[in-house]
Length: 490
Image 1 (cartoon, one colour):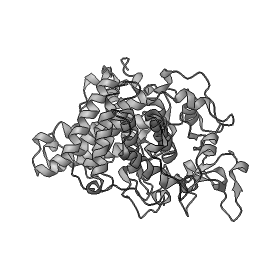
Image 2 (tube, helix red, strand yellow):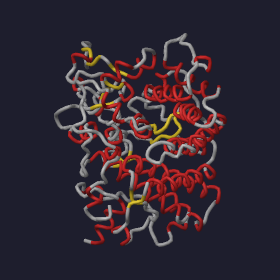
Image 3 (cartoon, one colour):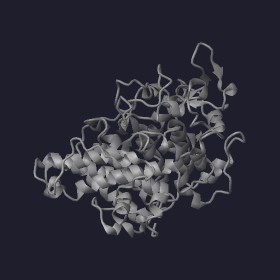
Image 4 (tube, one colour):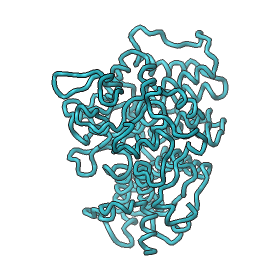
């Protein structure tokens, strides 16, 4: 039983799912010296990616990460039926057994386990050094990426640095956000120097992706809970590196917002994707279940899992971005009903809608974890909140995102408009809310800026309401029972 407990903690498996223990070992390499070979190192890296991309169980190609950000003001869920685990987030009553929270937690730690195996062994691996360095760079990126998601969701978390099972995992203690962020920054700094500049497979990070996430990490560190405001300058500088070298990194803004979400299964990566987790056709555990039934209305055979909050939709600026963001009429046949007459009486998100195939539970489309407009808004906000306030480049960055979403002829913002640095920064945050609606972004902005309470106070009375006063304790979720029941230190 002790050995089983160690395995459960190290791999972060959920005991209720027998399939988690029946790992598909086809093509995997074994032996005491396997990680000293280049093929073995690549195999460990593949296992790390699998932690981020296991349909219905772990990671980010299913809707659990979307459910976990329902405490923001852009997304809500069904007030009844079988959506109890979704409602816990929107009502600030997350339990230790919540499956949605656990799926992200398990996936990130599974990815960390594989990344640790690479990081702890690549220096002695025999093979082509340039290739080995890239494998290690990816592992550093994945570990930093995973811990970034974990500490933002859970705050104080166990910092696991070994890929092997050991008794110490039964007594490991939680690390503070500062300790976790120190590792995240270190990992992403290593990744940006070890990864190539050019894009390769759209599901693998390059140096630009590492820099972009490092900029986002600095922006977050400047806010709650660390409040290290000196990080605003670092965030702006790192984001500017990405912007100034976007061509060599393969990043660019697409000409229209609608083009970002064309939902063409043949297009598995666009220049706007900084980093994505790829799904695959077939639905055999690796297809992306964020698309499809989970975001479809019941009138079309959907599950009504997530849809727009009412005031967020009503306040959304009119223009091509709003038209491409929301679905406001539903129905499988020629007859359509407006959202006001639907079962939930809410608009739905067109972003996750699969055109031409509305009755399905998954798609081969990727889950994009950061888009290039995010980098532009990082620079604009961080420059405004940092030394000297916003410069012309900050206005240019914001206008690139803003004008694409608004009607033709909309006037660009400029320093002549007389916005203070704070007003400009707040305009950027609001712009990011519109641009990344239902893309797992708004929640983290509200947390770092300590605006969760205000955002929820402004909800429509026809949306789900918090069941108790919100406090800072509600900014983080409790660690899953699968771990806390084994290790009292957690």
